[in-house]
Image 1: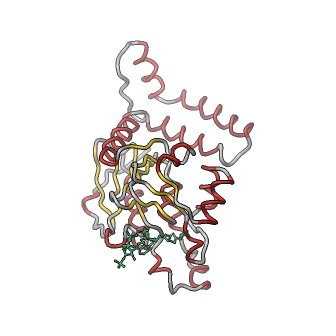
Image 2: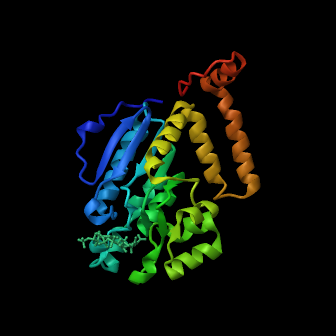
Image 3: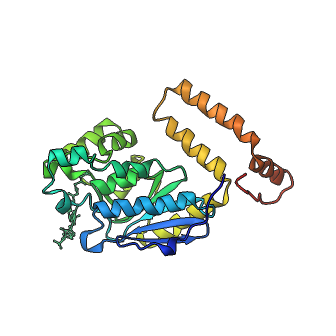
Length: 267
Ligand code: CAA
């Protein structure tokens, strides 16, 4: 595959911070005055940064983080307040947000503080979530007279099951970190001071593996949400067969036999 090198530093970001660290592309939401509320510019910039990382051969995993107080407190209510149906229908409002979930490289959410409304939905679009012990998840749209609009009713239900998803969306109850872990919403809870370091360490580990295998795993797991078990198994089996055409499969297994670390080349 022809991947271009990227020049992240050439781009100007107003609502996010972007950096590359040891094979990991890190995006930090940066609208502290609005608790990282997702306005159109923020969603556009996240997508631009993800586009860059996806094309960057040096990047094997991506991380989305917020501030200690808020991952994101929702879609930007002030931006949405005066919108009306024809505008948002014809513009297909939030269709750009869906692109975040369609990324092929792994994307981890590091959630500290509030992940409400669109913020919770943004975290749910990532492949998995690590959260800090102060995290609060919720879909309070009903209190604003609207419903979740970036996948919340679907992805929260897939993650938690009907009872909790229904209760959270209808009552606007916020879920704390421990319950989120017990319910399968997050992969792990960490003390808030350790969240970012732990997330980056995991992301670096993922980035060191064969990107082909990593992307195929992501694709196969996501299939489980869309097709029957027999179709999913068939997809996994064919994908497993195809990976034997890669250099990385030879290297990974040879390295095991030779008792040395594998040097993957994404080939
Ligand atoms: N949109 C726009 N601005 C927001 C915001 C949002 N979702 N959340 C917070 N802000 C702004 C506040 O208006 C405030 O700005 P000003 O200082 O200019 O007034 C600033 O961020 C700080 O917020 P607070 O003073 O409210 O901070 P707090 O610590 O007292 O409360 C909070 C924190 C409980 C998260 C509270 O800010 C809050 O309830 N926010 C809204 C949460 C919400 O309803 N989210 C769902 C949005 S709708 C949605 O997301 C639709 C969808 O599915 C796509």
